[in-house]
Length: 317
View 1 (tube, helix red, strand yellow):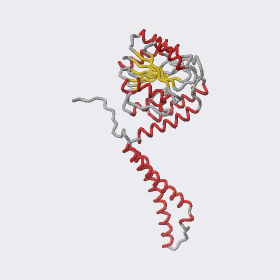
View 2: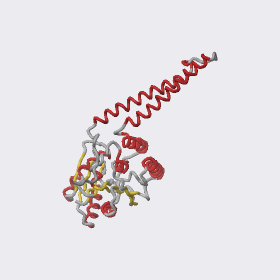
View 3: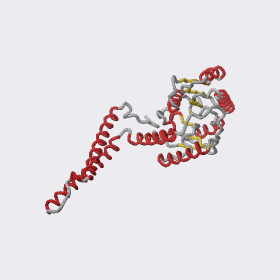
View 4: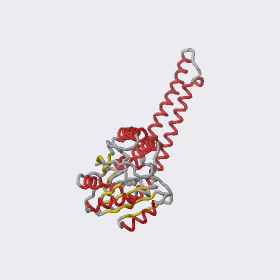
């Protein structure tokens, strides 16, 4: 099968028929073999009934319905697990992503050798203050922290080589950082293509201001887990050791200063009367706690089922 299109959705009953018709038209015109996987993330409208009716007309359509709303990452992960196509596409169900972009994105993966191609909505029709400006700041921050030079990290329209979606895990709200997760898994050929952005035709957006705050926190999480997930002692142990040494050194200096002053019959302040002593004590205690956290994290990491899980690209013999 050439293509799998994964469509996560939540309360998008109006747009689904038009989207499916559009996808089918593009696939037929380009002679692709394909499947469309619509993942209903616990909608409380008639989205699932619409999917069931569309299935009668389009045999290539598959539907998955969650019992409740789990979030976009969960919907994508389930879609990735079910996908069978050589190239897997993701697109939103709100008709703001254009299926007409599929042939060129497919060519970039199959002919130009990209592992992942992300859409870039260079010209957007979203509100300036609530969407476009925060999005630019958000993407600039992600580029700086991750080192991946994509202009629109969170664009719903993306194309993946089959083994990419089978090798990564998307959870929580990490769907914003799939390119980061993919690169950390070893898929470094990541490209970008300017794609058409369309105005929302039906319904309203499902995301608010909190996504920018949550997005930044998720970025910190994914960067930390990728670097120290299997070696937590390298982070906590190093930081804890430095803090313990710093606090201990300050305490020793304070005690040494007192003893030196006593030996030379000079005036001195009792060590316990100095705020710096208590600061040093707190720093040393925090250092011990961090070191212990690293040690416990190391024990947990070594006990995990995927501690020796590695992705093999090629093998001979």
